[in-house]
Image 1 (cartoon, rainbow over the protein chains, first blue to last red):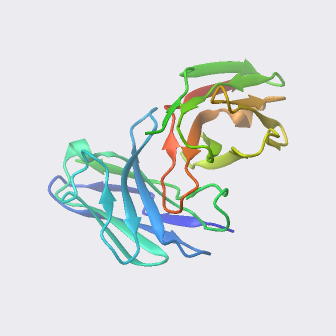
Image 2 (spheres, one colour):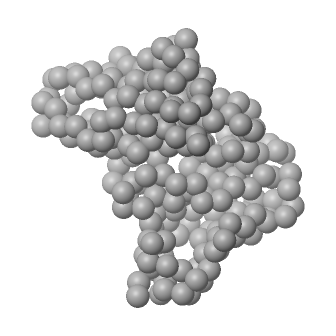
Length: 117
Length: 115
């Protein structure tokens, strides 16, 4: 149980276009989901906290107008990278908490490798 | 604010040997949870082991065990009988018990297991 599905696994887009990444909790409801960004051989950097039915909370330094987050249902959060540029190329990972006890670890999606050319 | 420190960027070990990865953290919370996650080359994050701060007993999961020293704010991971499949980046993470709070990660330790 506690599976998070993330799509696409990888995407290549042209500079200036937008890309949408989906994160779905398959067997549990997630009031809150988290979006991370990871550069090669580095740690996960929290970008934003996605809250179902309300606005996302962005970490300091993350452009909310560039990284649009929508959490329209208890099982789906989306991250849209708008007007993507090569510096947005990175690995993006979502995670959610199954909520079956606060000591249960967060479950992560398989990640999306974004390459902007 | 909470911080998590992993002071070993890279480590290597031979198959069947034991290795210990270090992690220290800083918090003013009395209750919290600690985790070790593994990220193999596939980049899928995999939960290895978790520890509840109010439990004195160290957590164990098969070949993986932790040495949790609450007063010292230390949370090391011991991998026994290392296997090639243990090759991965390992992240120590902290979590407050409140719902909706994100994990705070250390910078990670890259572990290489060789035959």
